[in-house]
Image (cartoon, rainbow, N blue to C red; front, top):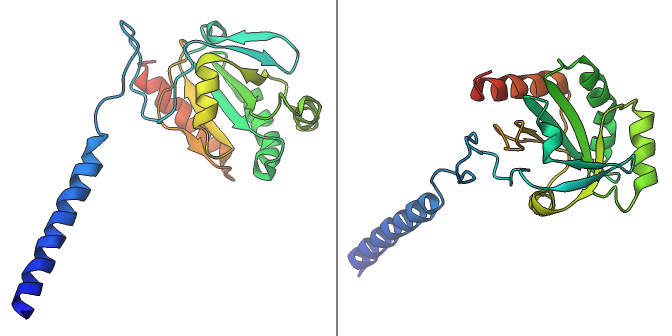
Length: 191
């Protein structure tokens, strides 16, 4: 009887290992690229921003075509209710002022459509002078539904394709982390 239990336990362990291996490899594969596009591989797990229209804090419209003048656009996603997001905003504002002309940094306040005055005040208090988005549709709306944590920062090419990995969370060494991700994105794009 003991021998039978031993063999059954070994068989169950083997079955469990096989099931885990199947589950782990079921999602593997290359990410899809838009048909006919030379999009870099998206390893972030988020939807790229290839088609959308957004509203800025200034009441203007911002679309994927606003990426076209830049090799890389850094998009910092934050919330007015997120303490770490607010604490890192002055560092983001300072970093944005140091960027080369081929790099753009914008912010997207995911609850800014509900709290536009608060979002504007936080940005103003942080001396952020760049573009800030409050809401959007299509790919931006899909992306918003995928966000689990803020702050989250992504890097997109001049067509809105996400390049490299997202930075999730706030970090003391924001400038170094952002610059490394920008450098990696430029390298991946052959620039």
